[in-house]
Length: 418
Image (cartoon, rainbow, N blue to C red; front, side):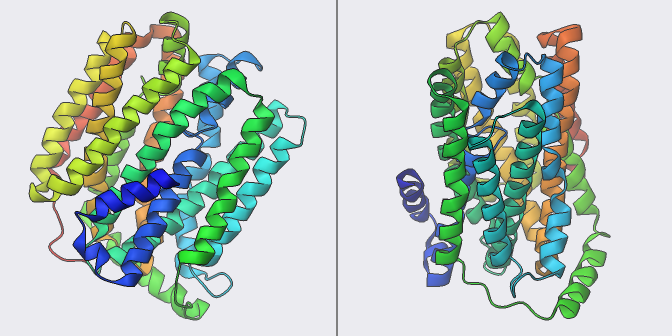
């Protein structure tokens, strides 16, 4: 957590508006800590990801295709994020729209990891519990993003808040990648599950301490306001433009499970070194977030996205040069930096176009699209890797990224919030 606090202090030097009011500072610290914890708890790339991946490969003897299906199933909870957003937007729980749900989901997640810690783990139990834990984390993410929109949009700080969030997330993932490789090599799965249970418990404490949310209106009034805001935003072309862009950008069949199998079986990288490469990608992500924080808003959005897509295609094709340890370090670092800049540009646009009354639903729709693209790429990639090999997957990923160029001319930054 010291890393998160230090990063917040570094970023805040560039964010005088964030520091101007006590409530804004408090929410900035909440976003900072929450995303730091989420980086460790995230099943797609956090602390438990590598140990579980190797557990599937070595203990259950799953193929790349079978592992791809497993992780796609675990990620289904993330595709339901618009439903979580609609629930919290329109149905207050225990008098609040965000805070109570945050505490409830953290509690369920901690119980899930506890079940794995103290039970005999079968394939079915592992799949069921990880799917539940991923869904609770997705719900938590929706609540955090909704608070970010509600707090940041009136102050025009959504981009700054998100730069802080994702830089902090990347710092957590750097540590998680390093530690994940060591955990996969030297510790038992029971220890991994026990450690993972700690993070939602910390989140509960932080939510009690930092979130100051006004009580919600009556359920009927809240539901009516949410539906009215949704009807308005669903008619906005920019919503569907952003959906298409995010899906194509995240449809990357060559990464995820195929990349892990390629590094393990073909390049013979060790588990610890693969974790180090993941950390290199996250170092690039931190730099990308800081670059966006400092310079991203000074560029026209279309120009920023056009350049990012070009660099994204280049960084994807560069993985054809993944032939050894030295090339891997540079490739992972560069890819992490480019992906972060583009990611933040689109997310900032999405946050600024969201109606505050339905912030959870609309922003979650964009994030569900992101996860659906990633999960779809994982399923296709796991199958094609065994059929056609890794180089073809690189070209398919680059093509998916290049198709984003067709969408960039239609991206328009809203002149004012709806």
